[in-house]
Length: 240
Image (cartoon, rainbow, N blue to C red; front, side, top):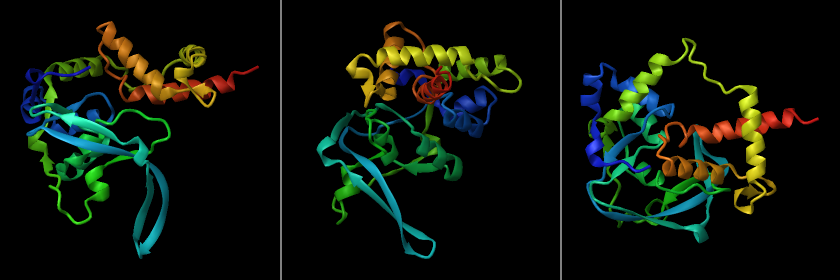
């Protein structure tokens, strides 16, 4: 579900108002309990290229060369409008925790669609701007980050109701139900990948259903694939 600018407030302001440190908010975001945003200062089109992970090769003592294969036939173009809220990905959040800033390019990677057989995404500028003729990516700082005040309130309310040990693992029965429904969906080719349920497509379906029913998609955007994988693994242990 998209979010409007008017729903967002400065992270520092939210931190002060709700008596929660910015680091705690970052950790909750890293755990997919919250989403953080940056307002684009410009309109721009980015070419995103899916890549397949390769092996690491030694370049020098303590250094490695990252090997990967770009899938140029699957390039995707995304358009960003000025003042558009761009959601931070996990890498950006980690960098904020460590150095209080991150590279703008992480914002565009987050716009890539789920695609089977893809390990990560790079932008065209990263891959081909060897001579440095194109504009470089800027640095986004912690002070520029925004958050939905409503979502933060909901998250803090849920945290107060959570069990003391923080355990909210789904029951074995729930995993079995989810796994069986996934196999049923896989009878439709759209939700199948090499004969198995296609987790990324089922994730897209869940987000679409939540949007259609006006349901808060909290937890569906990141956690669901782990849950779906757990359900599939559990189902394998239950075969007669």
